[in-house]
Image 1 (cartoon, helix red, strand yellow):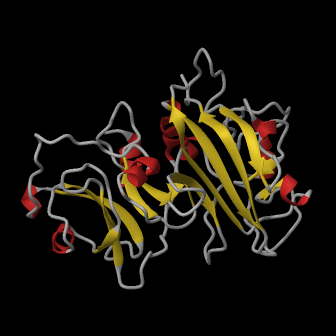
Image 2: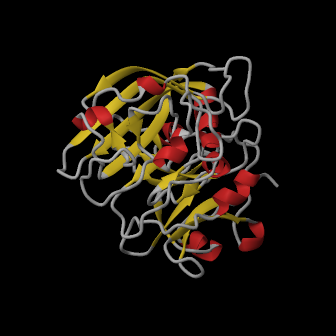
Length: 320
């Protein structure tokens, strides 16, 4: 059993429901095409079938019994009353949200993707943003003013595997980020909103997160490669280019101290930062170096109200 499989089976932090009518259901693979789509559904395989999806496969559902409002991955098979797939037809699981968009998924929302190159049948719950800059974005981080804030002061292993829920605040996971960006040249989009309701963005046309372990080309864990900035928020990430990912229990920055321990968060710290988007979430505009901030947004360490980080393929090409 792979650790990331267990981690992604259930999101243990409440998700935001995407409809007031009930729960959401997303087939991992549609009838024969192999691409997912978004529709209303329910919490078990019987309701999946009655919602109109009759073929076996993985589905993302809201678990309203044991964990109200949370997202599970369930497998609905022939023994659950589903129809077997036609294995003679070509099947292509979506690696990312761009694949889903190309397959006709035009709605933003929670879906299932298959990013693992070595385990291509292993599903991952992801939030797809299809309404920003042409869509196709796989969201990997979100911060917002929720009644209960998710703690981002986590261990190195927790950031590797990911935490939170794609329907609310979350970090998708550094292992998944590596998988999403390693085989295709990718870009990064960061959307930021202040407590004064001013929204700005930063876009990088080259974005890559290296592997956890050291390699010939990447000496630091989850080493960040980012370049070609454009946008209205200012460039507060290029300073972190080439940096490894630092947590309080894994110091990979260039400072004499551990930046993650000093600012009680985790990031691709240099000496230490010009952006700190995993920082402490304040519920108002506060200038504090521990805050979740993007320095060039306001020219200070002012805390931000909402943060969304997302990636999509720019063009085909291998990063390794």
